[in-house]
Image (tube, rainbow, N blue to C red; front, side, top):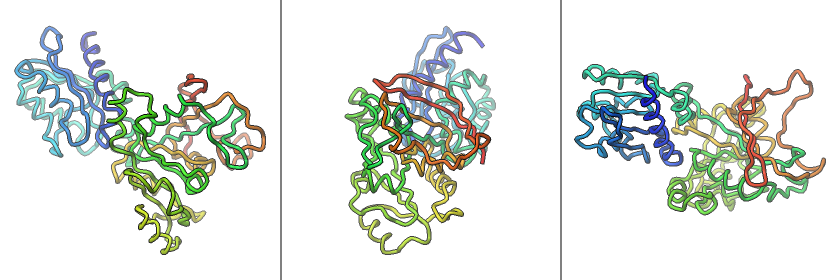
Length: 377
């Protein structure tokens, strides 16, 4: 592998990143086509589900210059026909002589098949190249394809003394505008946003993506907000008010409940525009969170953002369902009577939940702490 190979794959990774907010439920993919001297003759990335894949975009950009060239693609070219044709066959038809891939397709049912189509056509295949960077583009897609579950991020905001709001319920705003814009971007890359019924009742959030609050160039922000994530309320007894803001607007809302919920309340919420879904209950009588995540994966959700209060966020953590924890810390002290960050039934040091901090950076006047969880349940 030459330095130029890595450089061209790095460019493909950059292109794939342009689809960060728009490709769901498909993976983010970039493609570069270069001639024998290493000069780029075509580029493309997957822009949105239903539109051409990265390879097709790059081939169109290259035209006849693709013949005899090398294609650098972050993900194994697809071998199946969905809304678009197989990219592996398109590369064969275009006459490329070599394909360098970043990672194999994570779907065990099709992994390697696209590469085999290329090899059977006499095309030289090389890879994986920059696999770690290519995998980082699609952590949720990879998890859904391999484990049947979405990647779960839990987002919280707290004061320096670990509090999220006053005992009275007052919580706006713990963090500043830059942190709130960062949350908007987290929402935009997510397929679903999960919250609890108490958050809906007391805070009455919209939980939508608002282009004017994303701190992005306006065209990019408008494209990011064009397809809104699914809003999910965990509500075991259907206490969601029919007039809640989360039931309004263009974004769909799913209320997850149990078989014990009142049918009359279900009918009222459905009339208000929500979809109500009965899921199995856990031993505590509340919605089983694993069943919820399996349902979201079935609905092709790659990345899920949990934005809820201490109880539901703590339950997601305690049950081992959180892959990434994001905490915004404000330079404020709310006092000992204010609300805690998580409700976790931990009484001994031997029972603490381990996490690994992977990033810490300033976001305006606040700090964003990113951690992975090492919890197994």
